[in-house]
Image (cartoon, rainbow, N blue to C red; front, side):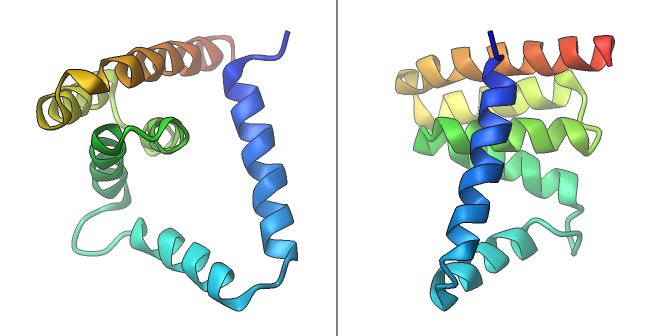
Length: 118
């Protein structure tokens, strides 16, 4: 059975390519703007991804949470840093964030297992 992580990655890649292939200028510009927002600037990319993770928890977007957890780990964030951001999102968003927090922790565990077996 394919893992949630591999399903997420495959779906995201396939659908982003499909959307790009639409050649809709405003959509493509928005995607570019989104990508640029997380590049190094006054804040480094990892800090920006951690901020994106907190915001995604508060907004309760599982796809966004997954993406930011993956990017945070890719950029070298420790589990302790990610977990502190989980706490910030929970405090700001309240108990309604708990189901999303469960899935985020499950994904973090999956990423760590993937890295260990790597």
